[in-house]
Length: 277
Ligand code: SF4
Image (tube, rainbow, N blue to C red; front, side):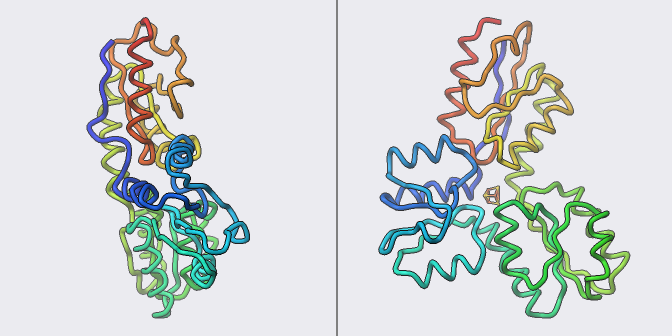
């Protein structure tokens, strides 16, 4: 069986940057998981003593706190800066951008529409910079929220959303409001991995998607692969591989989410190589 990697996969710029920041800030804690990959978080703990706190009150005085890649709400960042701690900001610049946009647009009097999942840490952070934002995942939700919006609307999208879905939100706003400011805040890294996964999954007869099961971009990669290759599987590491997935297969495609480190991908490939097909 041939094993082929997608042309683009794995760590994106923002995650590489955050991990480098964490490695250069040993004996610290991250505020919320740095990235959506618990294996990498464990590695940072073991090798660099980078721990994890979930609440502000868990942050010890005089400690060093790393702000996660997805960013944190504005009020929490403010409290951290006011405390006697060193704040190291590892927020991806592509996430800082929509935070800045919605803050500025709110100040200029626009209603803010965020296309994304209000329970996702990135969106919780972005929401906190806007005044009364409307957060939607579909045109139906937007329709319900329409009376709340002014005639001047600004819109941003969660970095990992599909462009085609965002255009539906934008088109609906254009049809119903006088002025619509559209910001394309979807991240290219997501597109590149998705396009490469689509291409490879059309050829492969088994696809392995490696990444955190709570990672939004990994789940999207998995859905894309599943559309083209019914025998697609999502695994967090090599221990989850099942030998029967590979029986009689000729081409095994591999892709990985934007927060999956190379050492996990290599371990998965090594394990697949040892499976008898
Ligand atoms: S996927 Fe894009 S926005 Fe998200 S961390 Fe990576 S580079 Fe930043």
